[in-house]
Length: 353
Image 1 (cartoon, one colour):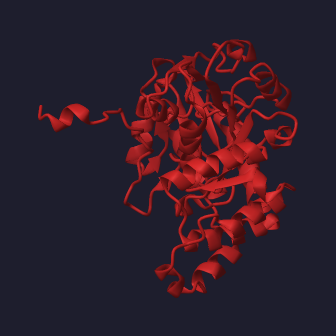
Image 2 (cartoon, rainbow, N blue to C red):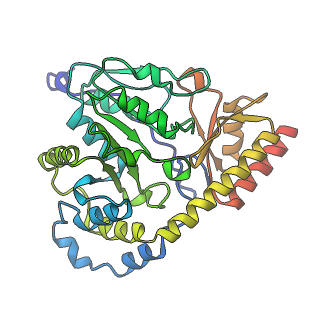
């Protein structure tokens, strides 16, 4: 090993879902929205003044911050915007998790949390879910350096009631609690209403799922003004110009169209419920998902076998070999009605055979 290599920060990177190059596949492996963005997004892209690209974008992302604040009836000082919720959460780790005590998050959850913790040298403890893949708030009532968990959880899709979320926050008033709500629009009640009640809660959401903007990379955090100021201070010390000018314009149009957002969100929920019923008929079992995916296991056929059989048919779902507790589950994103019917029809034939 060269001397310079001894000082390299080595981490085990996050592994994203496979992105097939073949456009004809049915892609149900990365929880993307199957519907296009709102028409206003398309119009803004088509009419974008490319001369703006020679200028630096607004470092405060003011237009988008104000639109998000309007949508949630907040002050703009309560909103922080970043390049996807991954950027927002990473910035939050960097800003708030700096004690010598371990931060807490579930053992089966978004697998980026431990990557960020390792990269930033933050001690952490992975708190086991119950045998039913639930978060037990009692397990988080302990001395720690902070807490983060998704609600609904990923990849299980299980939702915590708001009162349970509040219990975790209330039991840990001396540390920051981050509620990662990437999927909250598909079911359940957001914790955004708690930010004025508690000064230690930060709620993170994204445009990637319910607003069909995964390719634009837009995420945001909602919290009290002091938390948001701390985040901005670190952001401006790290990279002042985080979001490009086009993404800002498109994001504004995406959040302005509430009707389209609700229409497509409700359609995905409707398709999800239909898919749950069909999977149960075929011998699958799963938590009652409140997200835009279903985390399912079959009573007889191993998940890996089903994953490989589906892939041969150009139907991509997500298979996790680790940790061992979930190695017999598939995470199936909700697509269009047509895509889910093709999936179910194939599974019927395969299981019968």
